[in-house]
Image (cartoon, rainbow, N blue to C red; front, side, top):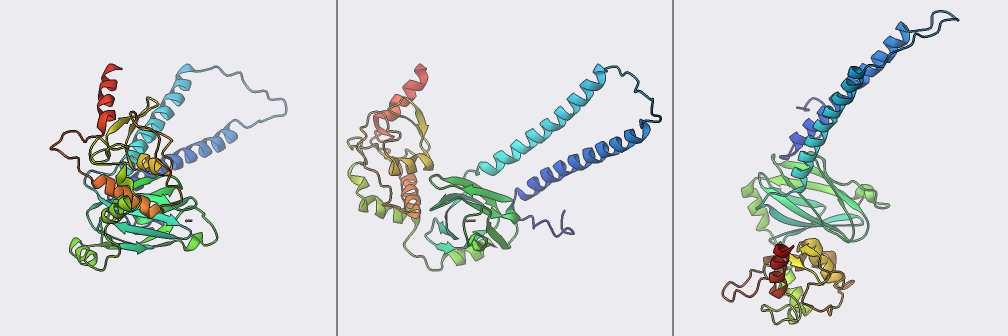
Length: 332
Ligand code: CUA
């Protein structure tokens, strides 16, 4: 649509068209009303100009119909922007099921990416065309912003929490990747390229050298290196909750709050274990703040997410707390 207007980047993802259509709609509304209002101001200024020194304006009557019209029509227009805008917003913020996981860390002044198969890259990101990619982003220091204009994806990355975003590239090629949040002296240099490849080409790229194993393998190693496995056992007898199958479930906390276990909650539990303790357990876990890098945290989480609940015992789901949760829900 914008091929002839060079200020618009390529439309290279599934949402790019939607974002541009919405932008165009907003621009069209603004242009229409700007011209209408400026035109009327000029027209009325001429038509109702003061013609003599003694002229006094005629008294005007209120018109309910007119007031209703100029209230209701803008309201309806504003609602179309709201509904359309939220629908695009939700699309951008809800990765489709089955998306491919890639982990990213922003730090002064580079982007580090890790693929589920173990490949690591810096300021470069290789992805296959036609496949949804779910990006879990973290920052090691200050606020950065992951921005690929051709995908219309921009996501602030805030220290201390995860930001999940996604895209599905539609055209093979090389697209600029930026940091879009001023983050220090070399902010302008914090960027690189996203390479969108044909699936077969991508497979060839993937088969290239990996270092340090996949995130799940690296996480498993950390899990035993940090002795997490001494408390988080495979059975309920452990001093900490069973972790297999816990991700995505709703768990009751000591405070009575119910928490859906996601990346952010696991991260918090590792760095600040006392913040929200699962009901039925004691707050005896030490903090691992300062002992694990952002990348290590992502690996640990990838490992915990990969754990399958044991089906034969039927006792692994999240221990006693999980069962309390469901009865709690019903009784409320
Ligand atoms: Cu990172 Cu600007």
